[in-house]
Length: 560
Image (cartoon, rainbow, N blue to C red; front, top):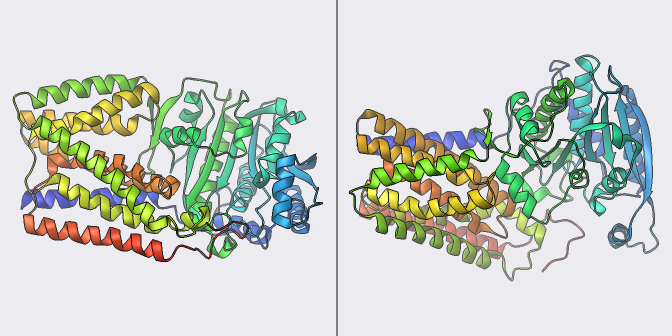
């Protein structure tokens, strides 16, 4: 009974930490202290800006620019505009949206400069885009970013005159292909004054705001972020994943520069991306609070930094369930893997079941990856679902993935507690994968390195015996299970409609961590639970297959 209670406590603690890590903070009210960020104050701008769609070149876009010009001037900023011509690709997209084959408007960037005490000091550039796609009011993308920057400037000014200039660049034509940012970073006179760049974006309508991309040589820049932000979200894994995806934001145009660069976004409520339903009423105000609080804290720290963070070797970083940011050099991963390998070998010496454990782990990974891919194919293929339908399907895809993955997990864990040999054997395929990841993507490999290190410590402690072994096993299982549940959620939100099999890796690592605390399960109860979970997965799959088209899809998107 004690073993069952401990296992249930591990699951409850892991679930609690996952909720903590993935839930935005409560929005601050309009009467919050003036020096703090308030989502309620920012939402006034959101409501005014996103009253209607405002793509580049439209009358509504001109209205939004006039509003933003007045708002920045009221904040004491020096306001100016920069105009440029759209390139052929941007013109083609705009003409397709509008149906006007002769459309050829200029793009108009807005620039506001809040003067600092030292006008010669390197300035901080805060960036968001003020245009939307056709047919979407864009309350999130990127009105939430624009409003967050306005509220950030207001809060900074309430704290006193900043040390250095704060430049706010509100680009035009981002939705047409980063047009405004490209024009600015091609040679704007302000470039020579920039000391750091912070960009804010959105893909969806809520969720945690994460630091999902940085410039190269981010060691000092990330260290400053870790010191400054009290409730952070972000990982070097997401930065690596984003770097290999064919996605871009305005920050893409800034990355070749010499300055430290940060990119923030939220991707929850994914069905609202570019949606006609992306209205202020549907925007998660907690996500706005999260974005603004992190950007304000970071900007204040950059303002106080002397000098600005220099280029330094890229580091491993991740938030500890939103409580703090852990940072360590990438080379430390090699030492951790070496120690884990030695500890696993010592703990497994003289035991049996090593080969069986390795084969079972390979089976779990294969069953999860292949099964999720097939279920996804059944759910979405041939239904006429386009990219935006698939985004709207992500919450149900997560249910589908949870049902299949947990059923596979129960089969993997079995009816009896595994021995040290089987547990060490299960770690071997993941250890091999970790070595490859450490060699090819050292800042992303922590996802494997840390769970393997904790498991090795657990098995070593279990070989020695005593109460310490139970403590180490429990804490290690809680940390790894919570980390993997959080990561699976983020991965499925990011790439779930196309690559749901990515959840197989977090599942495997969670399974490995749970083995030392698994009490076993009655065969009949195990079969019933497995069948129930499979039913959940199949039910979600069939629901998606019969409900393929989302009312939230972008108006210009083609079905099929």
